[in-house]
Image (cartoon, rainbow, N blue to C red; front, side):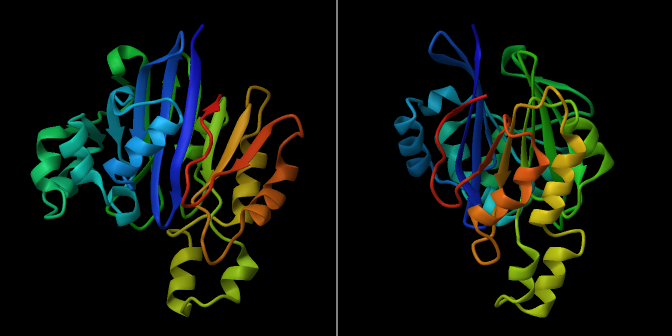
Length: 266
């Protein structure tokens, strides 16, 4: 019987990188890396701790072109030599970026509208746009042998399209970036505070909790809180704010910022 495995290798402004895959009889049969904020040496080490190898990654997805999500894209392309799937808009931006173009160009692939079949058909992927101030920012809805998974790392606000995908998902990864009080009274400049909180930056703990309350449904099993701020949040605050939005039997996990999470079975 197939199992769905998920792991975060880093989640925050220091870097973002996630793995989702299908395990058959103890081996990964299809696997995706989402974002490239971790270098190949660290990635190989983190995979090994979980009993995985770079060969378990069939392709890479990119959510947007901010540095904490694509810092190591060039070296991962060089090292893994796996297809990198993006939207047409992001493909164009990365192709012409002096930081990535030499290694991205041979690996870059364009996702179409609607569902895209990856990993020999075992994983279906559909992207949807999110309001975040990059060239373009997307979330991903996936079907992994029918298991419904949604990941959204950076979103200035929760959109109707995101709600539609999350309302059908078995597991959701959603940003819970900042505590409103900590941001208001923290060290950031007023301009940066406005950038974070005005609808095209990041999602607050309160906004995340409201979103979870809106998309919770009978089939939802797990919610993972990602991209927690180093300066304006804590895992305890993020968890405390969103926990009342879910029934107690459903899993809620704040993902660590700079270290790998456990390898979760979804």
